[in-house]
Length: 179
Image (cartoon, rainbow, N blue to C red; front, side):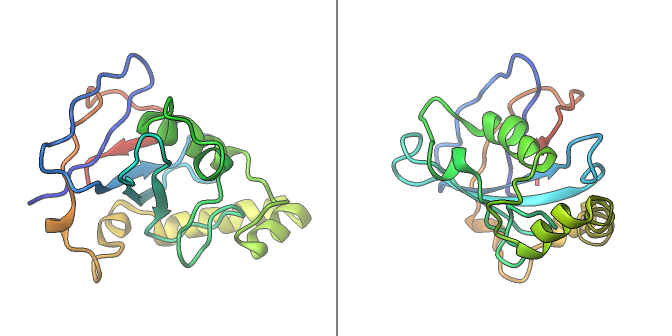
């Protein structure tokens, strides 16, 4: 089975039901927000929905590498207060991929880092931080890199199918696409 992921649009999202055989685990292709050093980057993001979803937050992790103070470079874990501590059943995948993650990339919090090197560089030398982010985007965040990320350990047959949230033509700040 091919893994389908969620795609969000910026206005009037239309939701479709999850495939009846979904397994609560899927990937999202996430594009870096424009006018940031992450622009042009494409990341494969692993999403796992707990049995208690939407009352409990999903687990979110970047599969291909990203240089950011609030994202662990090796594990891809995201330090995001809304996801980790203040989750509400009112939030959904559109909130995560159109609002929360783009805002995290736009406004990193170097005082609460998972990547100390990125945090220190951002605080000491913001231009060097931007250059290193762009270097990582070129090296690790191409479409091919996102498609290949985690390939050695992923089995697409274990991924669920999730319907699209909207039209293919529209592009929000951070986007979710089919993987």
